[in-house]
Amino acid sequence: MTAYVCPRCQVHAPADSLTWCCPRCRGPWDLDFSSAPVPLASLPSRVNSLWRYAEALPLATEIPHVTLGEGRTPLVPLTDTVSAKLDFLMPTLSFKDRGAVMLAELARRLEARAVIADSSGNAGTAVAAYGARAGLDCSVYVPDATSPKKLEQIRAHGARTVVVPGDREATARAARAAADEPGVFYASHVYNPHFLHGTKTYVYELWEELGGRLPDTLALPVGNGTLLLGAALAVEELYGHGLVDRRPALLAVQAEAVSPLAAAFHAGAQELPGPAESRPTLAEGIAIPNPPRAAQILRAVRESGGTFLTVTEAQIRAAQLDLARRGLYVEPTGVACWAAVRAAPRRPGTTVVPLCGSGAKTGLAAPAGP
Image (cartoon, rainbow, N blue to C red):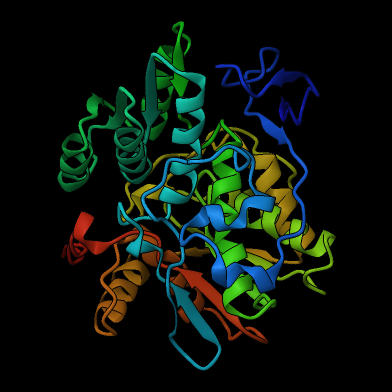
């Protein structure tokens, strides 16, 4: 049986309970879970979803699982050294399906009375879809500035939306208050570590597609850091099992308008000094002024030999149009890594950027005002 552990207090709790945070510090859980090596040669004959990496996944021992056939997204070249992984082609049109399928499977097993999530859109959509697949009763808390298309998609899956006035942090606070009710499963992509064990399949897929190798650099968007931390987990597992001979650098990307982690990293800080100012940005999905896993994110980037980059609103607009003209219609948050990589000096070796969400969810970014 796996267990939750608080990385700060070392408090433990059973992973088959509805607890969602450390009772001492109210911080997010990690998962005490040991993966086994994934045999590369056997993968072509396996199920065509992220559950193909069973040795690396908690919850994989019991079959059948909740699934919508998620994962296995294409990897396409953008330049001679940069490729894009098209995670906007997931069933709900964003990479959040990787973690949401794990949360839905866990909530189903725990027979939760209700499921609650909070999101600026994509995570809530994914939880709503996989909750519907699992027959769960879902409510999704969203900021009042959430894209109408994302709200429409959440509601179409049968989930209730609770629109919260204010920013992403206000939404999270409202959801956490509701999550303390008896019988409620908090499907938090930030607090529940099963989500990170789902997002790590992003790197397992790269490893499989590249024939047992990884690129030299993984560029990753960072708000709450769920894709970056999942990627870091996968890299450590693959390296620890001797399945790769080196670790790629993690290139973390934030919007300049809301970039507390980038500022802390370049100041040499181990933690955030406090919440950052929350300014408007096209990259709404990574506009997180006070990410709960900040210390883990900063440590993961440093240990990889990577760094943080920030992108301006103009760079985001330009990158979205550039990708559209290459045939790839991606939402503004999802183009942040391409915006950063194309503006920065060329890095040695190969780089992969994720295109995390579909432009169908948001449309094109409006032109800058006069």
